[in-house]
Length: 121
Image 1 (tube, one colour):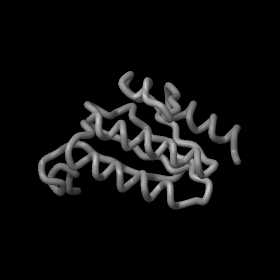
Image 2: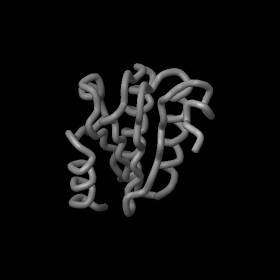
Image 3: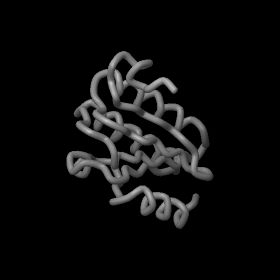
């Protein structure tokens, strides 16, 4: 198996989307800086476009440093999700994500998924 760092030019960070029912979960692993911000933007754009009412959880429990630009990308994605009648929740994120407008947070991935299951559009 080839590690992401060997394929991705020496970084150990990853942005990995997966589905949990109708919810797109995007795992952030390692520092989200530089090229990983672009990968996050691409993953969020795809996740928001997958359904007419997007439900997205950004699982930041294993994220390292998060670039301020990445936080702005997340805030914009949160606004877009809400305008489309959906939601974006950051789970287990750093305290730095909490004061951003348009970003809902939950302590764990499980709490975020349970919240979205209760509030299905």
